[in-house]
Amino acid sequence: MRARWAALPPGAGAAVMATGVLSVGLHLIGQEPLSRVALGLAAALWLLLAAGFAARLAGDRARWRAEADTPPALTAVAATTVLGTRLCLLGWRVPAAALLVVAVALWPGLLLSVVRHWRWRMPGSVFLVCVATQGLAVLTAALSLAGAGDWLGAAGWVPFWLGLLLYVPALARFDLRQVGTGAGDQWVAGGALAISALAAAMLAAAPPWTGAAHHVLRTAALVLLALSLAWYVVLTAAELIRPRLRYDVRRWSTVFPLGMTAVAALATATVIAAPALHTLGRVLLWIGVGAWLLTAAGLLAGHGRGRGD
Image 1 (spheres, rainbow, N blue to C red):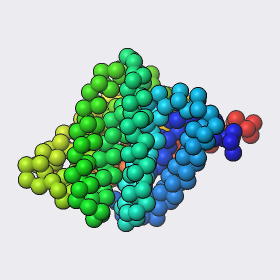
Image 2 (image 1 turned 135 degrees about the horizontal axis):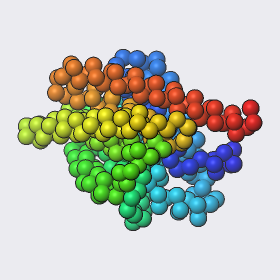
Image 3 (image 1 turned 45 degrees about the vertical axis):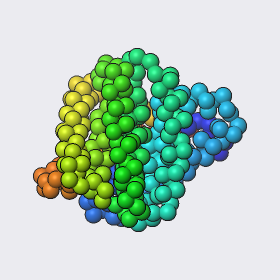
C-alpha cells in the first residue's frame, strides 16, 4: 500500500474532482442511483489520496515540499470542496462542513507555495489557483443554501472574487500552445471559468445576496458560463484537429471541466430561469460521463499493460 501511495502524482486529485462533479450533475438531473455510485467512487478515491498525502507528509517531507510547489497540489483543495458540495446536496451538512474546514486549512499554504513558484509558459494546471479558490466559494454557498448559516453565503463572496482575480495572472502565464499540444490539463482554462460561473449562480441563490448584489451575481454567472463555453468550443476543435488518444493522468483534468461546464449550465439555468440552458447542461453532462468512461478505460488498460496482462 505504501508503494501505491508513493506512485500517485498530485494531479491524481483531478480524478476525484471529475467523479465528484459528475455526481453533482447526475443528482441535478434526477439520476440519483448513478449519482450515488459516482459519489462512492469519488469518496473512495479521496480517502486513498488523503492517505497518500498524509503518508508523504509524515515519511517523505522532501517530496511533499517539492510537490506542494506545483499547481497540481491544489487538486487537494479542489477535490475536497467538490466532495463536500455533493455531501451537502445529500443533506449531510456536518461532514460537508468538516471538509470545508480541511479545504480552508490546506488552501492558503498550498496557494502561496504554488504562486511563489510560478513561471511563464505553464501548462493548464496553472488555472488550479482559480479552481481551488472558487471551490471554497461553491462549498460555502452550498452550506448556506442547506441552512448551515447565512454568514457562509456572505463569506463565499471573498473567494469568488479572489478566484476571478487569480484567473488573470494564470491566463498570462498559460502557454497557449498547450491548446494544441497539451495532454489534458489545458481544459482547466475553461473549467476554471465554469466553476466560477457555478459559484456565482449558487451565491446568487444564497440568502444574503439580494437586490443589486443578486443581479451582479446572476449576470456574472451568465457571462462566465458563456466564456467557459467559448473555451469548450476552442478546445474541442483543437482535439479534433490534433487528436491525443493515449491515456495520461492529466486526462482527468479534461473530464472535470466537461462535467463542471455542464453543472454550471444547469445551475445558471435555474437562477435565470432558462429551460434551453438546462437542456444544454443535460447534453453536456452526458458528454462528460462518456469522457469519464473513456478515461477510466484508458486507466485500466494502462494498468493492465503495466502488470504484463
